[in-house]
Length: 413
Image 1 (tube, rainbow, N blue to C red):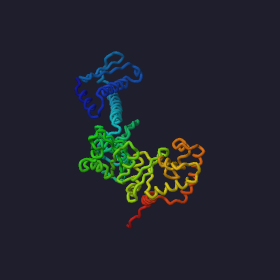
Image 2 (spheres, one colour):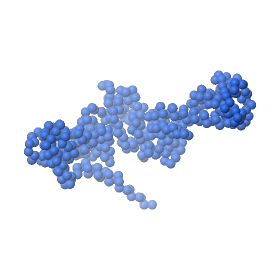
Image 3 (cartoon, rainbow, N blue to C red):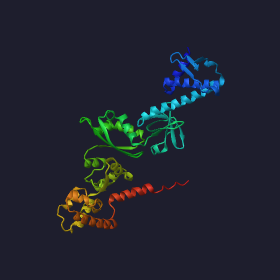
Image 4 (spheres, one colour):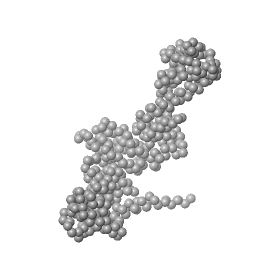
């Protein structure tokens, strides 16, 4: 009996997470290679078989049906068996790592930083497997040090000829989604559903949630008692702001919710253009736009609508320009403007962009009249673009962009 061999196989299988049977098969293949090495080139085609008893570890070898003593093969064949065995175990280990982590793609793993390589972090995630967190997948403004424990999302698993590359991410939107599943049991159980998520990593995230249980408040559950749950997530993200908004099937309500903490007075939707015109009080304009335009930009991505923000005065001015521009067209009834507003068209710019077909299908005017209206709208739009001042929202956004683009002055040495 060769219990030592069985014990070694069991240890390798446990330490490297390799199937025990696969190791025995590798051993048999390695011994066959060693035997062929011993008998030389003339007997390469010889029928050599090696079997190892899985329970006792006893090894039996045959050459052309005759029993041979595998222990007498010598040093050089033994070295051949060793090299073959090392190669096969490394291949089995790579396959084991790939099979394990390709199934865990999209999960959060925790690991220890072991070194930096050109800006990328190399992280040990289970004491035997290294993964890479590229610079592009690290949260802006956060720094990590060796021996620090870091949680990341398994973004991709790639199998190369010599290794398995596991790519991690802390900037992917799904990282936020998985953190909520870990911190909020109702999300993991499906009681609360994350319907939409938009993120600018390191700065701000908007997440729309819906409760499938009328007794559970989706926003309150995600925030936790005195903000305990959301605070854990924010701390993990290094202070990144997270806005939790209530999901609504009504696009009007969802857009209004997504722009919080700003309060909206009115939302006009144009389904033909996929755009929404949102009216907010002037004192709420900066809140609606957000720092560097993040609030409105994330709201647009969260709702999948192009959002244009106007003050009440600007909204009324756009309607007045639209009404005055079309009032001299003969054949249009008094309700035409109201029908345009119902379609979400509140400016000559919208009317010029929408074209004639929707006017025929939705409002019911003749094709000739629709063409006449859109041509006039195009002329008015060109004139307005050249003469009209920018909206307050556009001015604020331009100022925010200047702040971002202006180079910082270097402090004197």
